[in-house]
Length: 570
Image (cartoon, rainbow, N blue to C red):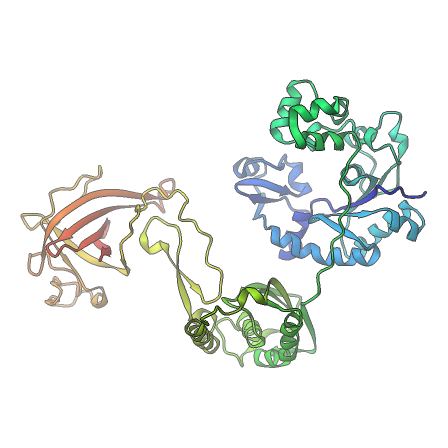
């Protein structure tokens, strides 16, 4: 059987996102697993579908249907990374591969059909390649055009299984495509010129967006065959270029062709150790040459690496995998440092490992042109000196020894202070998320790492209290701030005269008026309630703002332990 010019082969791996997560985490694919993206189910395993979980469900609805559902966040980068070895191996069997999405590949059928003798033989070779990689249950579809070929792959029966009723209906073509579709287990081949009849019973939503699909359904057009029967000129006038493109797909006149990717150069470095190494310093020394070659391969083509992943396998079958970023670009010494930090943890460089290391692999995840990292016209001396200084301190003291400040999300100001190790990616910006009870801009300039005890007094010298309805007992007249650095000797006799401390708690502010400052203005209180649905962990505090006689504004917090100074408006 000779292949026609428009013939396309599509290789489809069902549930690839689930397979990628299970491969990375080492969990069983037979468990009910769901991947969540923006609160909705993006993909789920066959076991989860057995409980009624499906794509597009809200997380709570999915957990209601399957209480023991295993939930993970969907990571598109993980999909691509785990699928890359599969793509490279398939390219060895059939060159000219286009990655439609992780788990789906498309390729022209003419070359493979001539090389292997037929389209069916080429499909069998592809399935054998994936079986050799440990990927079971893959399907192959061959038809006129990528769209029809992908639908054929999805209609192919699983190896060792008979066609389901729905699959049989999907593969029946007008004029008898049940007879026109041929192939074996995991393969569905649609005869030339029969693709339009094959896809005719499929829903029109496969080629149109949600809005157009709703409109077509209201007009009584529900299948691709009914959509293809509409006059082409009328479709173009009503739905524009996008509608005309969808109409061509539904009619089997797909203009899209396979765009084979250019295989990227291999920059990754891998080294096996025989015998296995059980000391961190030995491993770092043994990989020094590999790190230099890893960086030099990118330098030769004027590239730099700004992010990499290190995978380490030990003798017991365990794996350590972590991504590392760099504020500028990696040098061989930086790569060695990251290997050492990943193994070292809180130990020393000459410490032994729990299990000897048998394999080390370094994979570049972020590559950029050297032209984007050249110094400006006036140089970058000060920034470069700062970078080298921080990097050297980090190399001597460890990855977490040098940190930079970043702003995160939260209700309390202390929660918004996030310290990130030098070179790591800052946390995702969550400041725009709804945080009921959080302070609006502008935020205080000075946020205390540890809250300072405060005495807030009324005109009679009694401490200002807040009742259950959030109403203060009296207007504040004076306040005193304690010294947090001296708190700790609870029960000591005498007070802290310098800070107005009361007897019995060194560092606590006095409440007898000595050393207290007048309150010029005040505002509040504002309640902040966290985890109100959990009585055991519920937390309720009140915020309060005051201005002292020097014109300095303070942000106070009242909780069950008393008044505290959270921040100061300098």
